[in-house]
Length: 300
Image (cartoon, rainbow, N blue to C red; front, top):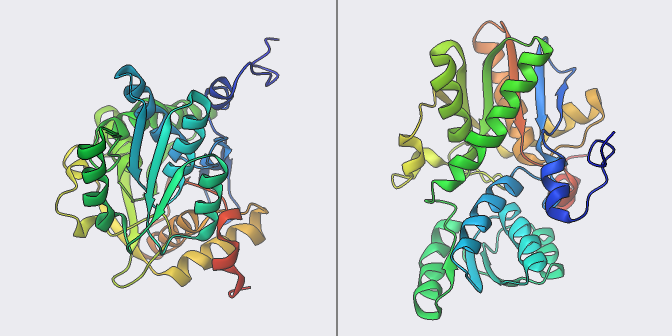
């Protein structure tokens, strides 16, 4: 066996890519439902490691010395880790409403953390100003199509290969939306290869609700990612429903998933109440529960 087959790695970048594909786990919450466990990514313990790596590689090609980004959390942690490895200055803008755990972890990794505003949308003008006046490279995960490419080339291909090898006939894929990068990358891949045989279902917070890591993309008229590939339908979820999804998986499968993952579970439950639960459903679980203990505490 090779060193990578027994999980021995020379550096952290090899570790990250050596953990791909992330596991696909059959869940006990439905008849034929599977979860893509993206918290096996080592830096942010989230799907955002993929986005961050692709964006970071592009920045390195430009010989950048300093980068800046707006984030709700996980992308910032992943970029902080990469910046520490490659000794690049990183300034991150994060909403004041984001869980404090994200800010602490980014500071541990050496990032310059600026907490302001209530959403990443509010922070983008500040990021652009710093980029223009200080010469920082703005990675721009919200508009840079490399974000979509990261999931088209990795996440989507992994799901396809894992399900084919295992004889799983995919009927639908359910994923949350923040930047919409990972759902659009997955949608583009599966629509090109399978057309309408695979349904792509997006998940977003209900009106007036806040769920860490995701937002109402349908209200964002500037989101050009949604023009790249077809999302068949979108299901709205309340914060409490996302919490219920976290608890449901924890008490049936023993896996501690994050709030955006819980929102995906809630969307799946709503979907099967409205339509026949035929064929396999793939749920993309972006991260785990450990950064959200404070948010979950009052519900248990």
